[in-house]
Amino acid sequence: MPPLSLNEIKQRAVKFSKEWADASNEEADAKTFWDEFFVVFGVRRRDLASFEVSVKKLAGDYSYIDLFWKGTLLVEHKSRGKSLEKAESQAFGYIQDLINDDRRSDVPRYVILSDFDKLSLYDLDSPGEPKRTDFHLKDLHKHVHRLSFIAGYQQYALEDQDPINIKAAEILGNLHDALAAGGYKGHDLERFLVRILFCLFAEDTDLFKGDLFRLFVRNRTSADGTDLGTHLAELFEVLDTPKEERHKDLDEAFKDFPYVNGGLFSERLKFAHFSADMREKLLLCTEFDWAQISPAIFGSLFQSVMEPKERRQMGAHYTSERDILKVIRALFLDDLRAEFVKIRGNKPALKKFQAKLAGLTFFDPACGCGNFLVIAYREIRLLELELLKDLLGEEQQVIDITHLSLVDVDAFYGIEMAEWPVRIAEVAMWLMDHQMNRLVSDTFGAYLVRLPLKKSPTIVCGNALTSDWRAVLPPEKCSYILGNPPFVGAKLQSPTQRAEMDVVAAVADNAGLLDYVTGWYFKSARVQ
Image 1 (cartoon, rainbow, N blue to C red):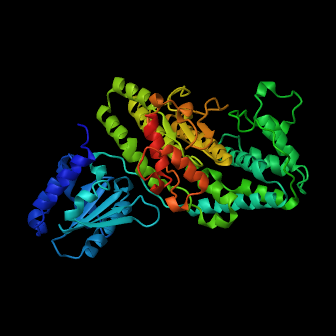
Image 2: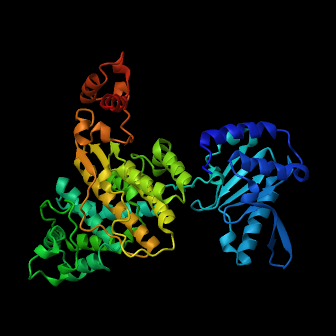
């Protein structure tokens, strides 16, 4: 049975809240309350959860959980007006008892405390302390998205900025500052650092074998750094050359590096001249575990690197993952996931749905460093992986997974005015692709790697308000437009921005009062 839509769940929640507004007695009403609570989400409680489930305590006696859904939900209920502090103590005590009784697989992700009027929802998978949300029964309809796991919707952790990302920005920023201080600046520095970051990430995610890059820098370059720039330039050329076309007498230090392609290493840059201190800063970068850094934050990472004064305010000038997920879920992800849930177990329908996913295209005409595109790509790949598990069986070992995933980076398009964010967006997409391929490999017990790079996202460097979007992606081939264009109030716009608005918003009355961001809406409407 397909899950209810969130709108239908909200309607049921409003009705449920009114019907139970006066309930007060735990012993008389709690079980019926929870039976009907599950109905709000279109499921039967007894198919998922049980009342009065026993759990063994350390002392050997037993306690009883009010309502328990193994691995998913634990509920502790009190009569109206009773303190929920005792309920909280009991609930988390039960969880510890489950762990002590070697029942870790039964430990739930969610805990709900209630006295009929007040409800407290805990998400134990949130970073740090369990995330707690408190609300009254009358406001249940406002929080059904947090409880939609009951209906079968997958829940996502919305993490705040990880301190490790800030540490990464500082390490890479130190290298940037040292190179810039030495006179290596502008376009060459930006492209150089993007290449370095790719190598660092590739090494820590098995695109490069072992510690190939770190050992190359440490063992094949002099301690004073004088030959490091020359050796890196040679390495970049090797990475841009197919193995069969490389010189037969190529130094052994280069032979194990793969062919990358994709244009990342094709341009010949000026040599970066290193000192001993600058070489040590690069070596420090190689000691950091870059596999922990999500490509989804590469944009903010690099922006903070390029703007040293704001390095410790990373995230102030880009859209957070939390907010990006809000946009893409409402725009397409929730609908796609609901469609997938309806066809689970139906192999012909699953194959057709996978082809649909592979045929979708995404366009961000203000893409910056690509955060929207990177996260959208990740979520579509994760949905496709769930589909493949259902289609093939999660425990099945697949011998050849080369063509298993149909979704690829060439379905993603963007426009960005500055050049270096364009390059960062391209690299971030490739690295996210590699992370997803590793996930597929881990799931099906075979190795999937897309090297050399054969497909690329289309990220165009240009002014989105003056360029022809049709030349980037024809409207009839565009599935979704998304992003977060710049907001600039009418009185704060530069003469150039005002001139752009005069053109794109000419059809509107009082166009001179409009915010700069509305220009993207006019452009979007015009190309439909």
